[in-house]
Image (cartoon, rainbow, N blue to C red; front, side, top):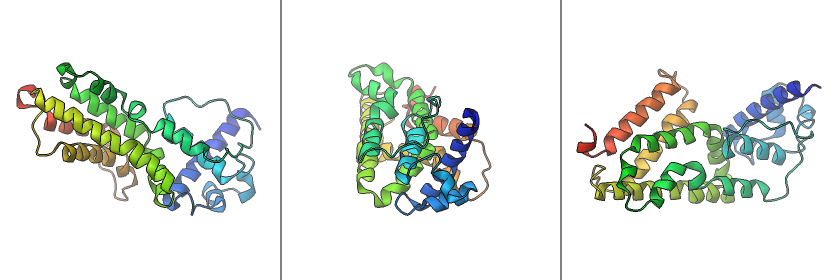
Length: 237
């Protein structure tokens, strides 16, 4: 089998796996279901991956860790089962504030620099783009975390909680500097921003109703409305 044909079949396998894992969760998903979704005999999958663990690890790496990276050369097939704990360790290294929102992390490290609040639109854009690029991986993790406690800890406590806290701190500093609008509670505002971005960048893709706007319009609208809502009155002019 030629390499480009192998990559194409692997892409088909990963697309089928994503659909089943997101629908069923990691523990309930069966390789036979993934084979059926892919339209092949169950044994065909094992030409590409050694196990469900290997398939989940590969899918998580491609969709949650660094979706921007170009696909590497095809590994030796079938892809081997990773050692126990390897997938969690990979995600723990990736699910960090610095990896997910480097602009926000950098802004918080520049204490006393009020210029970081002048371009808050770029910060919101980064949060939207990070969520959008990892939308399959985040859906994969959120669904599988329901019955995988260690994975839930990695995502919710390792990334989402620090992200909300960091964004709340950014808002508090911007408000104190007179650059951002005062809000009743900075943590509520931060969570509102994170969840608004999450719905438009990630969860709207699972909405069964027809989509009446494009991804580009969703991105443009969220950045515009969220940025306008947090800027101080003087900064909106």
